[in-house]
Length: 134
Image 1 (cartoon, rainbow, N blue to C red):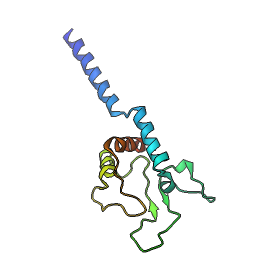
Image 2 (image 1 turned 45 degrees about the vertical axis):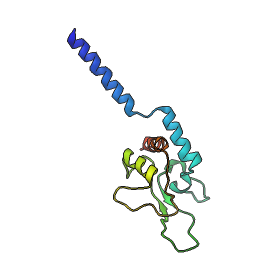
Image 3 (image 1 turned 60 degrees about the horizontal axis):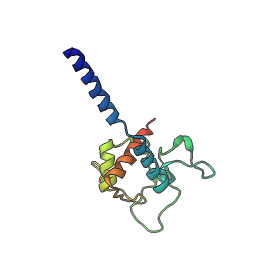
Image 4 (image 1 turned 45 degrees about the horizontal axis):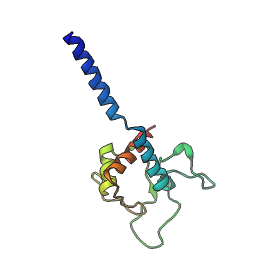
């Protein structure tokens, strides 16, 4: 009986940890809203086709910017891929979105703003972007 109880307890614990590792549907929906509606991240981080349309099958996989500054300044002419968070862990992405700090790199340059999201919003954004891994 003790072995059965321990097995059930272990299975319950494993299932609980696995469920906690998966972001909730509400968190993913919030992240998607913040990325695609509020932030409009796709405008820079998705390539454009010949007529200027977003290339849907390369969603948030990085793209050349179609504009330049009118005055000399530090400038990043290409937006990196963010779908799947290829260069950051989930935790690093949250820290970046809350503080503007990137691991081992300088702060971002224009046109990327230094965001100051709440931790909850940063978690939602990172979860959504991570869910887009191909």
